[in-house]
Image 1: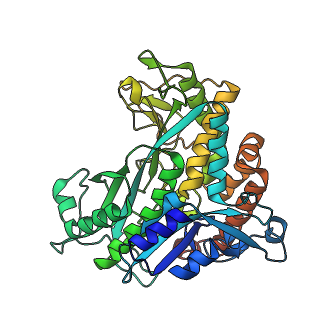
Image 2: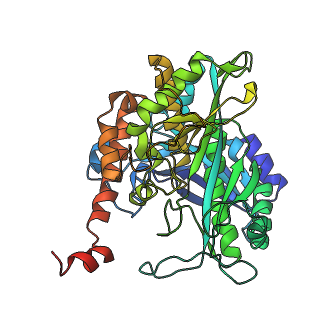
Image 3: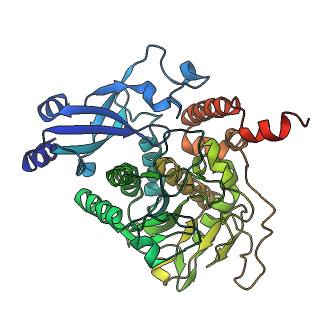
Length: 447
């Protein structure tokens, strides 16, 4: 707590946001006056908030996964996550907590715990994963009525985009005031954001993070989502990480670049004297075999699966290729020390802790089982059949595939998977009760 206290004193902080990520990846926690935060040394909060659905409901198996007495868990702030809150009116700091049960163990239902557990498995093998997320998002016009379709935000010219403008400099410049605020907020919080590009959707952009430690990058993406929403509101628009917010626009992803370093030498174990190593192929084989079972961690919401559609610039097959964006697992052309795999399945709506944990878990299983991948799609080959969707098309299907896969359940934690399936199944059933306008239009008088 000494480091925390010194930071709070140095910046004359009057209020602290004590946060943690729930199952959806959203921030939960408490606001503290600084003196109260220091006195409590972390504090307590009900463990049930870890298993609340995105609608605020509870899983059907709620009392099987948490204590029916609605017990507290203990929050222990991680000083490495201490940051300023640049949009606050008063001097405010934020910190991310690790969650512990009352027996002093990391809480088995905490997203941050799951990622820590996966990283520990690699540590025991003398390996250190390195990841780099690429996060896509849309800027949209404010919309108070959910029955109305969303519209892309207009830039400084006042004219919304009407054409595909991938990598357009002028299209990005339309939103310069917002972008300046975003970068200012990120710099104040020490977020390692790198390049910004305009994606193919109207008012859709992508921010890239510098590569680094998976837990640190998960924390940064968690903070970045809050940051981006605040920057957008400041400029009169909304920012959304919804996987498929608009019918005729492409979806938003969070691609995860990943490699492994030898903990002792610091060398990239995916490289073997200028060519991919055997461990590279085993890791890739794990991603190919287990991603279908782990897809609900990459596509965690009912809307997520609208992104996995033919001809929508999204991965729908389990092929891999070198510098090939028509496949789900891409290996960029890079120097030997930068040899890596890009998992293109996660959506921007994912919980960053769970998506990163899941992709590392798939790779770990590939290493331990010494799996072999298929032959790559060569860059000169015809692309895979874009009509053949090889992954789940609904959240319910993804959850069934997860629940049936013992290796993924064991490595992610059986108790956690039961809780995750319970929460997400509750969301699916809530969604399934809603009758859509399409059904009323085409089925009401025609069937």
